[in-house]
Amino acid sequence: MASVVLISVLWMAVAIVLLPRLGGWITGQKGRFETRLLARLEDFHIFIDARSVRWVFAAAAALAMAIAWFMLQSPWLAPAIFVGLLTGVLLLIRYRLGRRYRAIRYQLPTVIELLATSLRAGLSIRAALTQLVRQSARPISQELAMLDRMQRIGLPLERALSDWSARLPVPELQLLTFTISVSAASGGGLSESLDRLAASFRQRLVLEEKVDALAAQGGMQAWVMVAVPLALALVLTVMDPDSMASLWTTSSGHLVLGVVATLEVLGLTWIRRLVRFQD
Image (cartoon, rainbow, N blue to C red; front, side, top):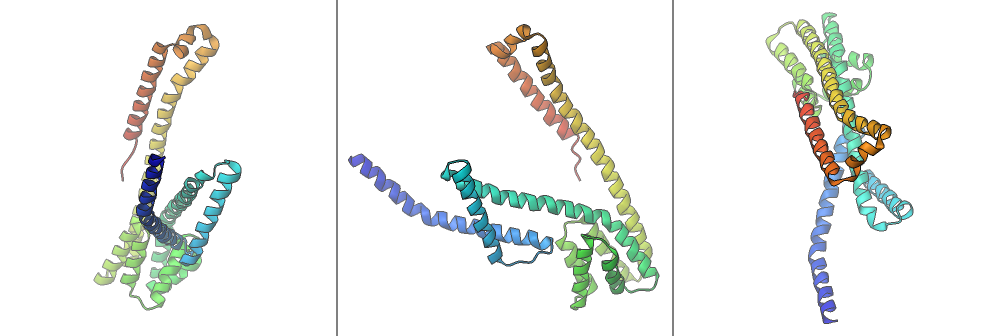
């Protein structure tokens, strides 16, 4: 009895010491999640305050409790489900942002060519950007509209372009900013520089598509290599189960399966590393 009381007192002491730190850690994690979520939503031009993000927390907590209580019959799993839901939200936003940035990269050469055409027609850069907002499709039209608003509030062109390219993780925008800044400082022909830049961007995208196709082909070959021995073993088991029984039921057969599985994983990892092209 005394040992039970002693253990209970020790657990209470541990809880008293750890609960404040655990509460501070949870508060810090919640603040970091709110900051990341707000930043990602701003990339989609969705501007909300932190109070709206707290409603997302409340909805995720309620959904996690409902899943744990009614579907899994285990309320103790609610925290894990809650963390999984929030992680899923961030991963979904990250995936959507990746697609958005990729679409911007594919739209950028056409936008640069339209900008060069407008400059040759006698428009200023500010007027050309305003016209591009109406002519371009989403999502790059939203980014151009933000750049146009930066100039309307009085920011210099170089500063607006620098902030614009720093906000978007698209390396081509940095080259575009550098080209416009150098041409504005040196007084060179900006339209000709933009035409060459658009052509180089388009060639780079074509090359990247070829590389992606070759990488996908190599990855598919790796998965075929993994699937063929498994499919062959299943077919032989159906055709001659007596001869294949020792492979599935004996310890030596299990050892062979373990060796084959290890070699398959090593081969798959090796091939995927070979076909992975770095930027």
